[in-house]
Image (cartoon, rainbow, N blue to C red):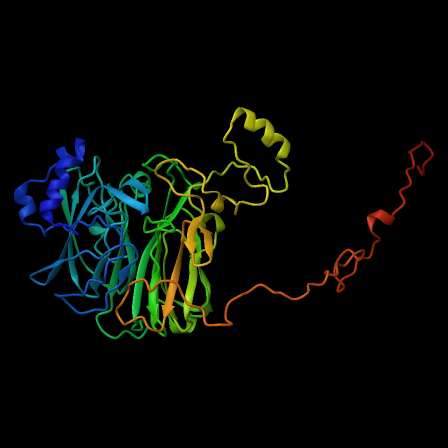
Length: 471
């Protein structure tokens, strides 16, 4: 985390139109000091030192923006700017974001807080910010051209309103939205209840992250901004597995996870080993009589979901989007299926022209995780991630919820791999395996047998039409 001094130094090396679009020192002097974060690590919760107390969230591979109190108003300073985001170890993307990161920092306030947010534009084009889900004065809603003039490059605008209702929210530009969101401009917002709330329970751990997607060719750094659906990088907080941190909790902790979707498709988010309740949506906390247990909840485009569960099963539990392509990393979409194709003849011929030619996909794609084949610079394998028993063969929107009995309260560090108690892990069967009996001839199940004979038993008689054939 850096302060204004390093922030200004960074501006000096950012170059081009961005560096030229400077904000006057007099204007900056009146603003809260901008805080910049360049590490992609999951930062410890920011305990409130001023203002109303609350139980802070932990942003997965992210952080919370500090504030200052000014005559009872909670003041923040967001800086829209180009950033370099490490999406996974060894793979960086050139994005646009806020305060050194994409997504930007999480903003945490308390119900009833009056907030003032300064937004400085260091982008090469104008921008604005929409406070997704907030009830606020119309002129603060952030749609450029409709509610306000766009914020020109080098200018600072200020938004001010009361956080009227508790819940899970987001922020993102509403100016040149297709480009700026495709480049990674977004952030999370949490409004905590000001006291005990009949629909909001206290929890031991409170995580949040955004669903987002990019289309970045292997070997390149900048997303394709015109892609609508065929993204090749599906991410949580602009991180892809194995770069996504695990969610580390103590056995029997009550856990809340807040998820916002700013991609262009829905995501069925699935947790292993536990059932959860959807306790909050875009509209705030759900009535308790409407809640039921699930293991998967669909988060549609532009929606927020808040799930809660008791972490009462020890172990390492997969947590992921259930669209299987969304748990892959950079991949081509126009690859033919080669399962069952005998490559031996063609591979020999191609090898004469391309000595390094490698046969792939004739037994499925899992072999790719073992080939350790060279890949272009600045990308990651399509599926990867080594677990305690080998490759996990995952990517994209995948992480692990780690439940441990000896994880201390407030400790979010990674406890390592789970040690399975004897006799509790799947193992190879070493007995005799009988030849399975396969049903034949019935043409289906027994509950509704076919009325007609199989086609192989039908004798076909061909009768050519004549002028006397029944007419």
